[in-house]
Every structure is written in structure tokens, then in C-alpha cells.
Length: 305
Image (cartoon, rainbow, N blue to C red):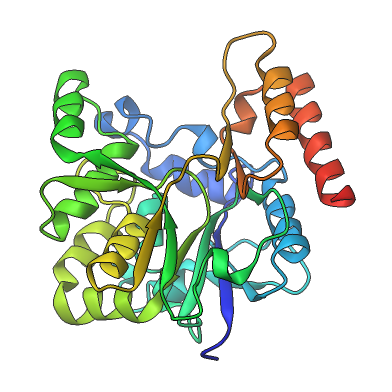
């Protein structure tokens, strides 16, 4: 399986009554509510997963198996392999159920028979165009990281001033976990190539305590690091990664209050057809008209490209 590349996607259907009931039993902590760690948007399902898989099959034919990691659910997508949380949390079942994607991401390398090279997707990552394997993994074995360098100190200061632990903090925390003190990689919201052996060695042999502290958080928690960032930094520090500018590689949608936001975004998506991927974030917060317009546009893209 050395020459193969797998895709790993995290997915959940928050509208499932069983899942919603389990979530409700554990929500109640003031910190969890205040930091929006259990907001419905984190668990919504509006069909993004189906577009994600369609985009992989249409635009990335070099990807072999597609693993969907979820909690006792099944999106019923033919040709995919569903991996339950219990599989990757084997030996760690006392921490289940888990509702933090950062916790789950920490253990995806434990998927049985996962290829050495794999690409991690959120279920709202959708490829924009046909892509080649060497846009993720070079022939010499190095992976390709699309990122910008940002200051750890600046992120720490901003976090202190706003008293909120956000996305950039999780990236900086990953760098700090590796002893990096100056800059982290801002990797954005796009598919991330990973090397399984680096993750296995780091978590199992070198720092099992970091694995445990990150994967045991039931909800997103202050201090958690971004596992995809850590994997990319491990590759860079070991000389197995090339960092290229992120600009132009990803498109991003997150509903805003502006009346014409979706219209402008779709025009942007049409214009930037060379972008590698689109992230459709918090689609449930868009009005029905905007949701329909965006999903229809994605379907046309996937049908016509």
C-alpha cells in the first residue's frame, strides 16, 4: 500500500435523535456554553459530506479508499468505509463519547490499514478542480503544505485581549508542543496531507501524554492543539515537507449578515477556478435561499467540470 493515498473525513449528523440525546446529556458546563463548544453548527449536516466525497471521486482519482469517521452513524455512501469512534479510541473507551473534532483528529492515524500517505478532510471541504497527486505528495516522498507563516507571540497577545481560544490558538499550540517558539503555519481550511508514520511515532513512542491530553477532551477545550498542524510541522521539522504559499489555494464561505454575501461569494468562486478547494463553513446559519443557491452551485460545479 506504499504508493496509495487514502482520504479521511470526519462527519456527524447532529439531527440524529440518538446523537442529539447523547450530546444533550453532556452539555451543561458553563465554560462549554460560553465558548460555543456545543453550538448546533458544529454538528449540522446539510449534505456537505456527499459533495465532499463526490469532489474527491471526480477531481482526485489518485485517492483510493475514503474513510468516514463518525459516532455510530452511517451516511450510506457507496464505496466508502465507515470508521466508528470506538475503533480509533480502542483502549481509550473511557473518554467516549467525544464531541470535539480536535480530539478525534488526534487519533485518525489509528484507523486500521490506513495508508502511510493520507489526506485529511473536514466534511465541508470540497475540491474545486481536478488535481494531481504531486499537489499533495511529491515524487520524492515529501508532502506539500499550503500555508503562511504567522507569529506565535501575536496570537498569544490577541487571545489574551479577547479572552477567547480560537483557531489560530490551536495552530500556535501545535507549534509550541514541538518546541517551536517563533512562528506557526497558518494552514487555513483546506485538505491537509499527512504521513501516518510520523504521527504514530510522535504519539505512541515520543509523547503519548500529548496524545492523551488532546484526545480526551469531550468538547473543544482551551489548550487543545490542531492535529493537522502538528502533523504538517512534524513533516517540516523532519525534512519531509515543502511549504508553499497558501494564497489562492482555497476559497472560504461562512454566512455573514450582508444581504448580498452569498451572491458575491459565488461570483468569487466562479472567478477563481484555479483554487484547489472550497470550505463551506456553518452552512446551517445561512438563510434557506442562500443555502439553496450555494448547494445548487456546488452541484453544477461537480456535474459540469
